[in-house]
Amino acid sequence: MNRRDFFKGLAISAFTASVGSNLIEKADAFTVKTYPITTKFPEKDKLILYSERPPLLETPRQYFDRAITPNKLFFVRWHLADIPTYVDLNSWRLKIQGNVKNPIEFSLDDLKTKFEPVSFYAVLQCSGNGRNFFKPKPKGIHWNHGAMGNALWTGVRLKDILNYAGIKSGSIEVAFDGLDKPPYPKTPDFIRSLPLDRVLEEDVILAYEMNNEPLPYLNGFPLRLIVPGWYATHWIKSVSRITVLDKPLKNFWMEKAYKLPDNDCECIKPGEKPEKTKTITTMNVKSVIAKPLDNSIVKVGEVIKIAGVAFDYGSGIRDVLLSFDNGKTWEKANLGTYLGRYSFREWFFYYKPKKKGKLTIMSRAINNDGQMQPFEIGWNPGGYKWNVVDKVQINIV
Image (cartoon, rainbow, N blue to C red; front, side):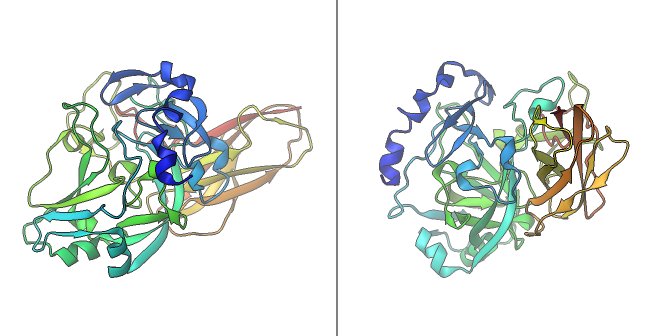
């Protein structure tokens, strides 16, 4: 079955076969109350379902015992319900327009033949990953740990494309629009912009491959913006139009969405409104325990492997520490192969429980800038940037 035929049945099979179709309640155009169940979508293995339309799928925690997240297990997050399910590459073009000397269009083959290919590993993480752990819970998708993944992205530098088109003086931002469309006339199209200086950095690319395969449709086929070290809100999927701007982009997604309180803690008390806000950008340092899972049963004297991943915004992971006595003492985990500063860093530790009962395992990452996972963070209205020390509890028998 080819991609086109496979996706013809998306709306009438994967979108309706799940019992979740009767459980999802849309509070408004941008908030979904979630009822997670496990399901399987085209090009994906079984993931945790939060919404069918738009597709919101979370990677189960146990798969973060490895540095590279397989495409079929990679989380999915779309903002708009009308997503592309088939793209004809014979007619598809990437349009470069706006404040440029030579507005131009490129086919996917043009991008692959005219520009130098670039590959690197980078973590993609939703801004709201971990939102479910805030108290009280903010509005939005109540992700647990799995709205993130790490992949080898291959594509072309965005600055090479823009320089080819010729950036005019006075340019300050670059806007990105994808093939997804609003389901209703009053729903704002998902268009976001980045500062020109960030766009012109070497590590910002337009990727056409993910782990040496074409991008899955659900992860942005045929072309996705990669902004390593920054949260996924900036990684626009199915990019079809790039506009160089000489003034700031003003729309819902830039003026109201993905904002943090602009203070030292990036937090406020629940019920309050921030005096000033800022756009969420760089990720913070974080580790996640993949194995063992919560409530696992382990025998006394049995050696178990504790494993997970750690990452940050690009400083790189220096250490991952584990505690078995609620944070009184810490032991260093072993770090896996270094795959680049933007990548997951695997870690693991072998442990032999000595007595029966419940045991809490805690993990804490430290990056090369000396930043460390905190024991608690302040509340923010969007439920963004959760990176509290991770923990699981196991039963020793």
